[in-house]
Image (tube, rainbow, N blue to C red):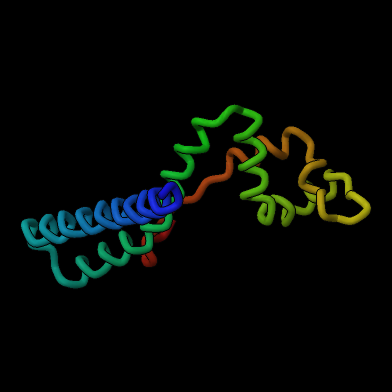
Length: 130
């Protein structure tokens, strides 16, 4: 019974996120119709929001991360972003290598953890120039 309850909770939560996104898209379509936007602009706006769906999920996960203790935040952020952090050569060179290379992440200096915590994402429409 406990497992069924947990599965139901997970499925319900996924459904809630999807419902929120569908509601957003319905409101977006209504807004664009009300404002008389041309079809080409409507398509670009919809494409942007579809692309931003993953970013929204990341935002929600960042809120969860901020509720953790500072040590847990650092550990989770470093593990989540390690593949990006280790690609920066000067940072990678500062992390002492372990003999089996499996736990380099655990040997990272504190400022590398701070970098991992500071990483974020931004969404831009395909045709935007910045």
